[in-house]
Image (cartoon, rainbow, N blue to C red):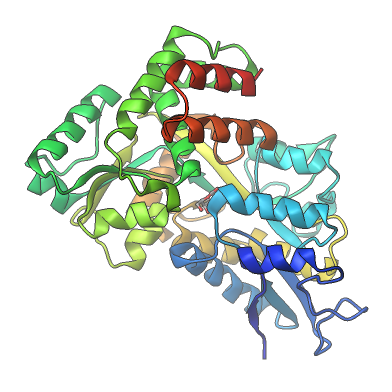
Length: 425
Ligand code: GAL
């Protein structure tokens, strides 16, 4: 009988690392578990709610395809924020999971440069993957001609979600479409006045605030100048950036005060519970709506985030073979499943993202996902800051600290702007 074992929750992992020789894997010297079976420990932050359901769907395919390998679930809570720090602690402590979730773009490049992930180009040949992924995406996973991870999915970050009952109660039309942030702010103002008990815009802890900031930067600067923030051609100290930060500040004034203790799912669920009107979040949100039986169009509506129609703010999850992985054969089995058509279809149908593979049938996916498939094909693609595509891990951490200081009232807009400029200098 195969097992799904949860070995690493945040606190347990931290405690475990403090103990010499405690690895979290009950492996024997042969690399198998105590029952003699091959295993693979996979690190993600898909630890709860709809994200855990997405992972489970992938694991079902894995169990079918690799009945001889135990899946060990190394998921930790904390989203793409604190959980990445826990992963780093494990890598630094020489206690690597066999495979881990990493974002395409500068984030995976960091792990490549640090020698923490193996070249898996040969698996692209063995699994016949060379022609199934978009070339631009594989380029983001490549360094020096070698490919270091396999993408499982593509998410769009610039989406706004709205609660139809809350909009209706405030006398607003049931739409999330706004041409600009200023038109959106008028709607937020109306929610505040007409339904004082409702939160106009729900948000969570600091990583979700960085996510909101990146969407505001895209809306206010436009895709070209937004791209320039990452390649040095847009001046972080400019008046345009300052105006965008003022909009960000204004949006934050409509958000819930308990935000800092929350991940993304609670603010999304506030729409379902009738507590909040709008939420700007990536398209892992529909999985939350689906898992709570919400009906697209009747209970919730969505659109590209205000002022970002025609832009696809891109991120992709990918999986690695970790350097020093205790179970490389198990990791190879996992990488086979996550790269397979069956694995990508089963996972993405639940997760809300679109498969990274291009040989899929769009009608196998939800109405929302079909809009994402079409946008990814036709719109201008820009890299996500929060989700590892645009900036290195160190740059993102520095930006995150600046955002946290600003939204907690410990810095003013001038200091905030100077700290962002410094992070990217
Ligand atoms: C992103 C990740 C997504 C989703 C999201 C929220 O960084 O790429 O797959 O998990 O975080 O947790």
